[in-house]
Amino acid sequence: MNKTYLLPDKLNISLTCASGVEKVLKSELKRLCYEDAPAVNGALKLSGSPLDIARLNIFLRTADRVYITAGEFGAEDFDTLYEGVKSIRWEDYFPENAHITVNGKCVKSKLFAISSCQSIIKKAIVDRLCTKYGLNRLYENGAEYHLEFSIFKDKVTLNINTSGAGLHKRGYRDMVGIAPIKETLASALVLLSDFYKERPFADLFCGSGTIAIEAARIALDIAGGVGRKFAFNDWVNFDQKLYDQAFSEAKDKEKRDRKLDFMASDIDPKAIKLAQHHAERAGLKDKIRFSVCDVKNFKTDLSNGTIISNPPYGERVYDRKEAEECYKSLGKVYRELDNWSLFVITSAMNFERHFGKKCDRDRKLYNSNKECRYFYYYKNRV
Picture: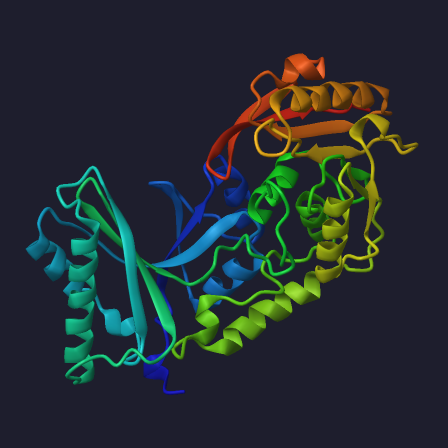
């Protein structure tokens, strides 16, 4: 490949995540040796290289997407928007056959017509690339490059999506159960808890198995993006040797032979069958013990473990009264366990009352844009 077609060595990178998960994502970055990543308008920003694009997509568990920020400038009218976009070196990011799509949003800005902004941004990019490549028009018969614009308080930000589909799409969940939780949020729940790979783990409302599977992947050091494809994999100007390098790094860290004491149960036999299917697709067939079990009948002789669950909210699965009965049953079961901690995400603000105990702490999180609380009940300190 001609080197002039490769992405620049220095890139401005932007990472997005669900509201309330920013600190978890920042901790992930620190573990990957990305220390300087300030939060700006809901995204974490850092400087990096194409290799970092590959590493971040493969390793991160709680990020929604990884973007290249191509440019930022102020604009209060369409002429300024056009000139600002056209001044950016798009030839550094898009090859001459790039299939460019543009989408975005306008918030608290003088420019608010999204479709008009979309058209002007695309025209400015095309005009620049045609001039630079000596073309009458772009054929756009190559790989897709998805550009997302944000105009917030008259400041324009232009981001190129390197991930493609959201990073919650790990690749193992090919069938969706009722009220599923995203893999990225499931990972965040695990990373926010006192979970430790050498201690027992349980999910008593496992549904399609996402929390238990993400916990097992964390315990076995299986990177979040191993097993899926990213947008940049199709880009002619991305050196795929860098992806191979990052992928090899991730595979070398895996400890798939590590013994786990993980349990996951649900009252619905169909959910358990689906969870087992997903665990097998994730390469975790023998790592998690799935069982059909009503929460009120859960028992274990194990001690010093961690429960992380996403019980019914009383909306899509059970009605409110049935959900509250689940919380009561969970409280009774938990009080009989030998020094376990418990972490529960729910939109029910009266959870503590029905559970029968005030939590040690809680924090606000969002599950599919629904405001929830994540309740912490710590095990006894020994």
